[in-house]
Amino acid sequence: MAPTNRIIELSSIIARETAVINDFLVSNKLPGPSLDWDATPTIPIPDDATDIKAARSAVIEASTELKALLTGPRELLRFQWTDFVSVKAVLRFDLDKSFPLKESTSFEAMSRFSGLSARNVRRVVRHAIINHYFFQENTPGIITHSALTAILASDEVMRNSLRVELDEFWPAGVKMADAMERWPNSEESNETVRFFDLDARVERRLISQGFALANNSNKGMFDIFVDNPERAARFGLYFSKPDQTADGLLDDYPWAGLNTMVDVGGSHGSVAIGIAERFPNMKCVVQDLPDTVAEGASRLPAALHGQVSFMAHDFFTEQTVSADVYYFKSIFHNWADKYCIKILQSLVPALRPDAKIVIHERILPGLESLNTVDARRAM
Ligand SMILES: C[S@@+](CC[C@H](N)C(=O)[O-])C[C@H]1O[C@@H](n2cnc3c(N)ncnc32)[C@H](O)[C@@H]1O
Image: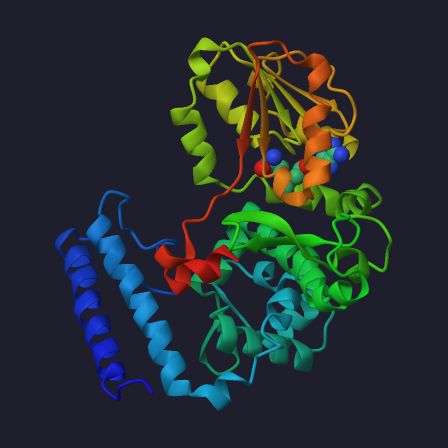
């Protein structure tokens, strides 16, 4: 039985560490956290302010536990299975884009914009306000943006990212248990979806299934996208979102002494573009499925046309480009070991003795050093 003073202990942590953050913001004349439409999109704590970042983690961790304790076990079992339905509807019907950032709107105006009834708009919007801080309704019936909808309405990459998660990954997750029952321990990509394997400490396709079932298909995720160019384009854009781990690759890998790299499964080429911009001597070839490279090529900045090229290539077939580096980012986590081996073997015909293979995957710290908030985020 937990000691009764745990909730006091947690509330003291929250009070103490929140004061640390507040003092830092005030003394550096930085804006306080807000969810209003004109709020700064991220809490302005610099990377090197490690003590302030630690204080923030401590507050989030303690308040999550305090909330769980005060909710109580029985009530915690009442899952909000409807959690994301409203967000998905807001995005599907572009309600966040239905009025300018600084202005307000009404349910009736949103209804005219979307073709949904005013009653359904009201249900969806109020659900999203209450559950996700989407929009604000400070005066009944008058809707303004919140910080979250303001970001979505003005940041297409962020918006697309949420859409892919809700339209592609979420339905697959809903079908995971069904697929596990149907194909226990499968390693086939038409029967599995990606998941974090906390024990192995890497992100892998942990036999957690559902994409094919969710799509009423017997094909794997990438083959399903081949048949749906619009969805494939959104999935490709998903990988254009800012990725700090790719920044590390630019800073820490010795590109300066090299001339050629192939970004295998490189999607729209965001990493290759970053390398080409930073290292003018580098020639980068982005290989991916035909529709994906066509979309990537159409988005390539003109200044990089001589340096970055796109090539349709199935990484299960023989590599034809001879290069200094073959770079794989977030590729192997999608495939079971036997397919990863096949992907690597396909490089052999093109490999020069001094060629390097760079594998870029997210590795988790051990569970023992991961706080519950980070562990949840990782999954
Ligand atoms: C998880 S994404 C990673 C994209 C990119 N490397 C990144 O991290 O931003 C996997 C990529 O592999 C590509 N892909 C899947 N099957 C492929 C295949 N057989 N041959 C080449 N590319 C493939 C997908 O189209 C997708 O762009």
